Length: 233
Image (cartoon, rainbow, N blue to C red; front, side):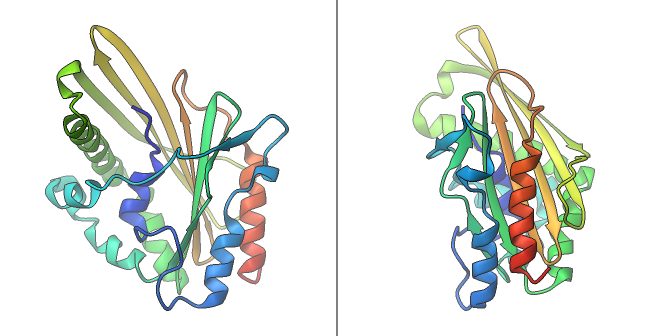
């Protein structure tokens, strides 16, 4: 059931590739790369977690079929106007997994469109339907659908209060609960977006035992600081 919730966000607010968009200014590509999380951003005891992220191949199709998501389709085209970079792996302390992506837009207006949408309850309703549909589709394609009696998803906006710099923050939390063979298990997600001028710095947290509470503000601050410097302050 492990999924990086940031994959859903990237599917709506940014381009689907994890490299610079064709023809993107070299400075923007360098800025996006500079902002991604690194192992040295975390305290001692954290380690890389390869393969902890990745977008589902079914998401783009599902978005067009879910009524609460259709209003956000223009943001997909908007996302392709910029350049994106993602951390080469997630990072973990053995309990929480953190992954990250940076999207640099040509203008502040371009970044404000998805950032503003991310703060609204309408997008949380879309994410709730999208995450549930995506998980059910993956269970079916893997042949495990008959083993899972129920999948429940709860998504709600959160208001981050991290002292990390930038020009604003927004966030969502999600709880995915699956029941299989009479056993219920939950996975908890939280996502935070920090706007840095014309860029969005997105952080995704995942924990399979309890709601995410430690968002490693020092690591977020390091990412935001490098991105801000790369964009010229």
